Image (cartoon, rainbow, N blue to C red; front, side):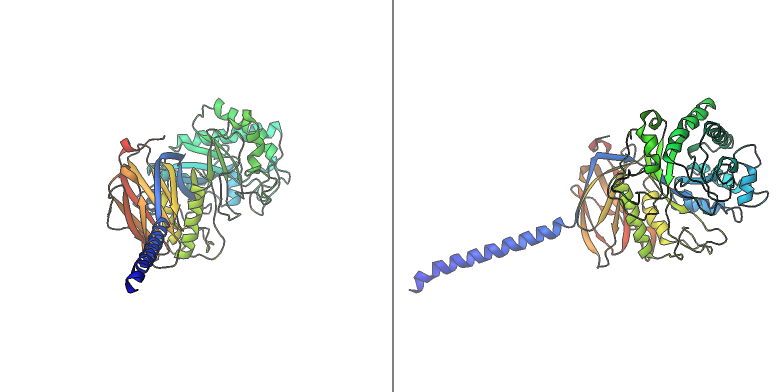
Length: 466
């Protein structure tokens, strides 16, 4: 009797053991799969034009120093590669907004002398400069007042005169050693404010682009791109029936006008993280930029704020697939005490500046994004250089739990090792010990609430797809 019971009991025991083993295996696989990132180097996405911010228009009070420009615009600092400046229709209108004798004395459109110097210093450091105008001349506005709001009076005479001012400004900047990458004819054409500003209709932007293109051509300007339309919101307030960049929509819906546009841009004061590329008709070779964003709350230099901005940059690069990302101001004016700037009036650098630099210092102009598959809460973007010889993988871990190990599958393209660069509460973009790449992968225990960039070398023979 005892012998007859033994076989079923052994079978049952083996069955239970097998089920337990399978459960443990599936559990382990599930845990592993949820912490795996796969980089697809052969799947090229958008080209990166760079990262940057604007000089403060009150910079004539305290101009940017060489030390500050080294910090912002070299790869020993933040590594920014784009500087946004502001142009004015005339010296008189420039001085009405600032102070006497602080604007460059030239006929036609001009700028602050300190902005010209900052632009020259940026170019000396390998950065590129572009310009926006806040308001057309007073005589071209419905309220006849340069210093506040109003609307553009759109007609052939005004379009011709305004295009001539812009062409003259671009030529002057080139003569000063600053070849402008792009020119935006109107900052935030959807906003009439207490400061110099003006509203344009989408149709006026459509109508003006050919005039500006013709003025550029007749002046021999071939490398400065026309940038439109810098509306204040990335997505329209009512998205169901409006195009993504509604103030550029008329221009881009007309192929003859769209072909004259080089960059499509908008600001991000809707404060949304984009979930997809903007829907823009006739988008061919034009690049897409996010050109201004900040928040007006009191200056916050902490890591929670930095992670909010790291998430924003991640989604603009991975979902919206922008070619460039800009914060608002670099440094404060005399009355700035808020998060519009990256540095406060005492020289304290916000951690969000270093979080943005997890991209800007390593992902250089001409690099391009590649596809990433990430299973789990980690936010990851990856990039390779134009020569396909250098790589950067940026991981944003905004989880508050303890450090968690992740496996990065990078394939045979990545050789040797990668160097992590850490931004956290206690680390301002500091290099960590190299991590070996073994059999096409490396593992790393990511600290909580941190941004890490893994920098390595690529074997270009193992990458294709451009």
